[in-house]
Amino acid sequence: MRAQYFVVDDGDAWRVLYEFKKYGPYGDGSREQALNAAVDSAHEAGERGFEAEVLVAEGDGYRPAWKHGRDPYPPRW
Image (cartoon, rainbow, N blue to C red; front, side, top):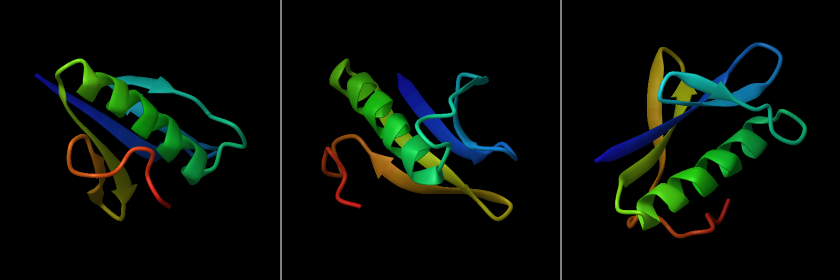
């Protein structure tokens, strides 16, 4: 079972995409706020047994930002 959370720029604010649904904006709508919300959700999914990760929109694709079991929680950024 896999849970992928995508942090994307939606024009007016950064949001989290999960299972084709948009969530947010969070706090001030910044990338950092959306990233933290995505990591919190991914951490919870990972604790329930999912292979959970967060990916951030960058250029024409996505780059890995955080993965349950690999990266510290809470993240140190």
